[in-house]
Amino acid sequence: QVQLVESGGGLVQAGGSLRLSCAASGSIASINGMGWYRQAPGSQRELVARITRGGTANYADSVKGRFTISRDNSKGTVYLQMNSLKPEDTAVYYCNADLVFTVNFQRQYWGQGTQVTVSS
Image 1 (cartoon, rainbow, N blue to C red):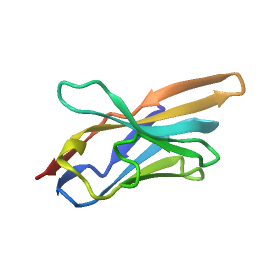
Image 2: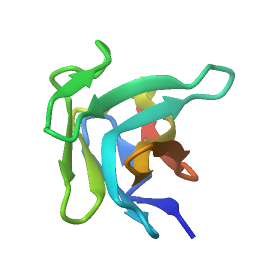
Image 3: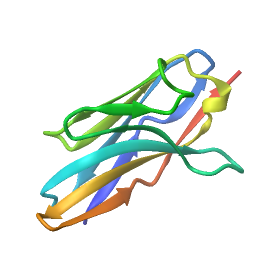
């Protein structure tokens, strides 16, 4: 069974740090783009950061300079290092990945989500 499994969420005080991890498992040929999205209560899901297979990253303006996305292709894992956290970063964070199964078939998967809560 193919899935993305996230870990690393939790409760932290403003100014603190957390590191999220997301690992792909199952019969996968390779992984193209990987990313993190978040959804706060009453809001739409939004992009936080995304990284290509080659390591090119892009970030939402609201997290630039505070968050860093990285990946380990050998482990099929993507990370999100979150520093200088603010209460407005509170949300459920979702991992996303473009999983390649054959040369002609890839599909986008989502993780189950992990809660990040930043207290003021």
